[in-house]
Length: 338
Ligand SMILES: [Zn+2]
Image 1: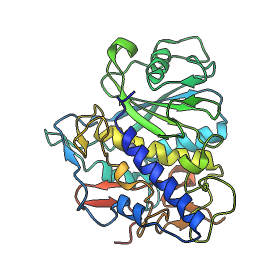
Image 2: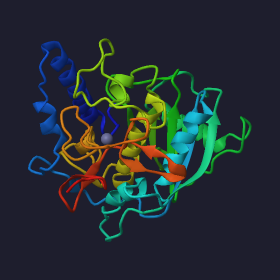
Image 3: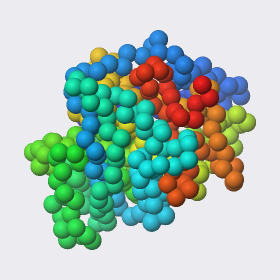
Image 4: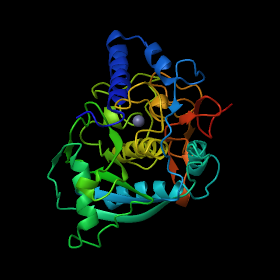
């Protein structure tokens, strides 16, 4: 199913990361040059990110999380605190400082992406309403179920077609089409015929049990096996769980892209809207200055030695990838050294 916007980009970038690292290890000699080209840090020569005249999310966003499957409350609070951090003050460099780069993008009326992202509702689909093996299209049925159900553990979510954004998160035991092979997450929009309205949504899977080396990098080493070599860039998870801390950065990636390309006709690079390069794709694996080829770049260390780059609410720390800055013309985050 090719309707997803960033499938091919993620295929290329994630598989290139995986193969580059695997290749390096088997050769006993680092060869990270391919990824350094892919990351574009400090260079805009190869980037053709363009505006295609469609809307961006300029109204304050009401974000609704759908927890699909069984979830650990500790992992849930790591994620909900991250969402709350997008529009809340925290010590510099903060998650909200990071989102400021996303707000630099405008639509054809000159309106910027909103600074306000509010967690406006949550729904737990504990009964696996669409089963444990999902297609991409299943996400729309999960949203449909959440906005029409009123009997499975709480009130239904609103069908908010004016400024709603739905985030479907699937638990460790759920298989999703292309998950762990081609994608760690994606975003698209619902069809009125399926969900009742056209609304942007994103999906991210919990990768801790299925493919942490692929979707929770740099908290896990691709392929498992021997310990990573020195300089591999693998770091400890700042909130204690590689799968969940890995999800946070993928969620951040997808939210930045859905805000700037909600209907797949606004900000993306390349000629094919089916496989665009969006503002997160251009900076995959980049968390700090000097990043490239599996090295995260310069990031902070918490008191336990875990890696992080941004502060959040309640004293939280997160490691979140950078996004493309349209003013600077390069990947950027508030922890940049230049
Ligand atoms: Zn992407």
